[in-house]
Image (cartoon, rainbow, N blue to C red; front, side, top):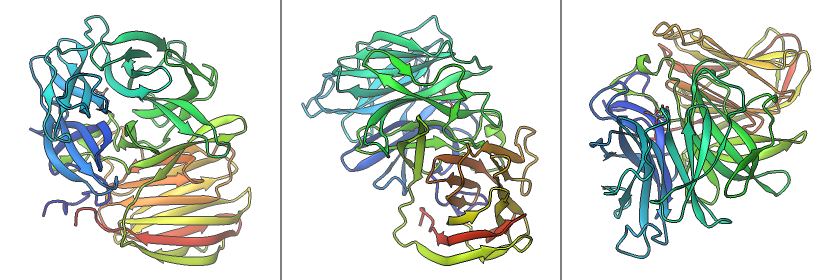
Length: 474
Ligand code: FRU
């Protein structure tokens, strides 16, 4: 049955069939969150890029609508964004209340930016006859336009990935674009390219300000190899972005896991939400699933958090399951060498509130299947690090699929931990989402158990809660 295949995500969006990569055209409009995505309607590999389309009213349950934008004489349709042209600045709409405009890369003889508009809530699109609106014959990598309205300078601002740097463009009408500035060339050089940028203005949770943050996806050179997303915080004045971080500073990874890429935000929302492609270009083409390939991460609400003078990205997963069933255990004590075990389901959220864990403790949370496979997150305070082990299940489909995924705890004690488990992924959020690690897993069996263990010293937990999450497809 469709959506019941082995490893088919039950809590995450996947197309019914065929290949999907980056989220595109994320926009909220008239009661619907739109999720367009890089899509091959003809196969399970990265080819023939179209935009697929799905909508949601809660960022969790999705309805798939099929192809929204198909290739034409200018090329295939690469990544991009969508905005609500409320005041019909483009003049493309009959009505003054405007409609949706998509801004995307045409990948043909070169990469150029084009637009299309929709007068029926994104169901059908008309490509602008003057495409491309931002022509290019010089720069090889020139793509993934992310556009938003910049109120202070009263213009549309486009952030564009250009190989080893970002370019900013401004426009009064989404059609005529003027170069504003470049950013990033002086930052450490990477073997890969910059892709899918985003510019966000986020609230800082603990000091009531708002600050700018520039998101960049890089492929390759992620913290665990391959593709990953990182960010700079700073200022944006409608022309230039000035980062707080210097080229010598440690990079800030949005998600230090192996499988979170090309994340961008929804336009036209009050709070800021984003979603990433839950895969890695190193092995995306061979992950052992069909007839679809790749899932999106859960949508996440974003904010900033100030710690020791530095701004950190914070991510809160959205799981809008109204019939969730929660089981909670209070004041749990875990003794060294005596794991505590809890029966859970294979689509679940696990929440731990930690009371005391001594600085020398190494403790772990492990998901165990009915075939005795284990997927373990180990927290090592002495090393200031965590490791996610995906040694079990299907692992041999790619030499680049690491069995151990490491990350730093950045000197923070883990006060709370959330893991969201689906049939082929585990998303880990530490300290309310200040540290995140998203990783694919391919168990042969079904996750049935949660085990918590500690190595040297007693671990005291205020609460251990697990929540059964129901399939979004029922
Ligand atoms: C990122 C990316 C984008 C490009 C798209 C093509 O994953 O390489 O830069 O637009 O995928 O599918």
